[in-house]
Image 1 (cartoon, rainbow, N blue to C red):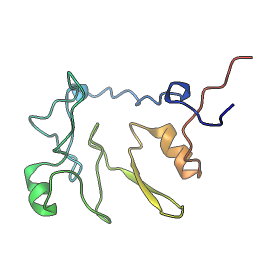
Image 2: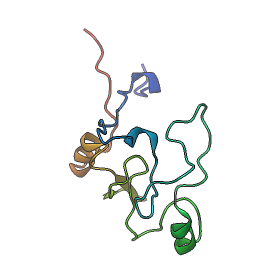
Image 3: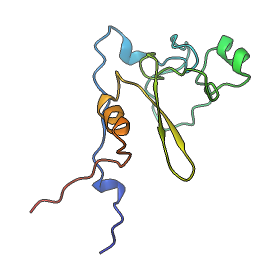
Length: 123
């Protein structure tokens, strides 16, 4: 049997509930955390996101997705400031995680566990 775990065997990590009024209808700028007008929170179908920053942040950073290395980033889902965790590997990976939206994943990554949770088989 292969040690490979399929996507269907992974535990789906859910976002923490956001109880702020209207929060589930907005997305936020990755550069400043302000609401992004004209960007729907839930897409009717899967689409490529081409804009993650407001116009002023796009002017500042020179593109539409997210600030470069060293600049703070903000959660696209809630607007709070992301926490940076660096996965030390042959090629280090920078993870920007929201402490409000994914607190369990942030704690796991800060503890050095970058593996996705797995479903334990029933016995």
